Image 1 (cartoon, rainbow, N blue to C red):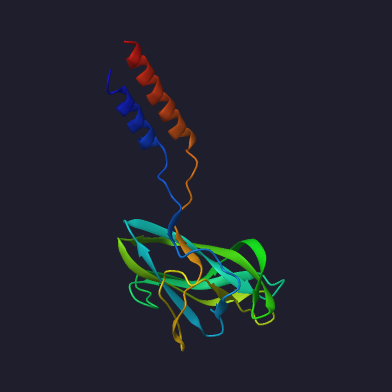
Image 2 (image 1 turned 90 degrees about the horizontal axis):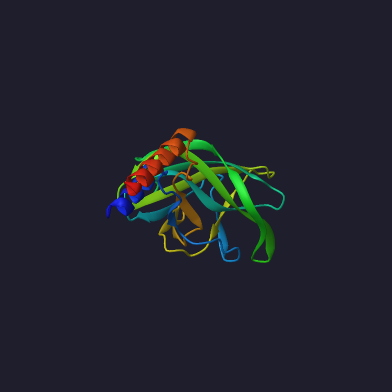
Length: 200
């Protein structure tokens, strides 16, 4: 009888989906400090720290484009070192954009929004890694995307430039999925057994 609460908790934990969300955040977009190009032959790499083992399935970043231009694709990589590709990489990842606003850098106005992309799972143990973005494309006349500088905690580098101030980005894992009908039925059955046992 006294173990009913533990049994109930175990049943719920067993059938509910695992938690998910942000693995690492380098802070929000700033929209006034500066931008760095991730197009036209430039690549940008930012470090990020993982505290416990997880699986990365995507990332988002603060994309800066000419006003009216839409971010389209980006090439990405994750590695142990700056610009490393040893843990995973991909080309032409499709960007999903949200939170459109106006940013002003050095007196000029641009579009600033969060661009999100997904990739196959990259397993990460606790440690420090590097996310690299390059070849970003948009609907602008020169297809360019820049990355908003927010002076976050990450270390950062840009090809041909060297060390730079870090950018606004997050490393993500999959969003929680809704329980399937079979899972819900199993949960209900488990609760029924618990209620029945309490009446005995």
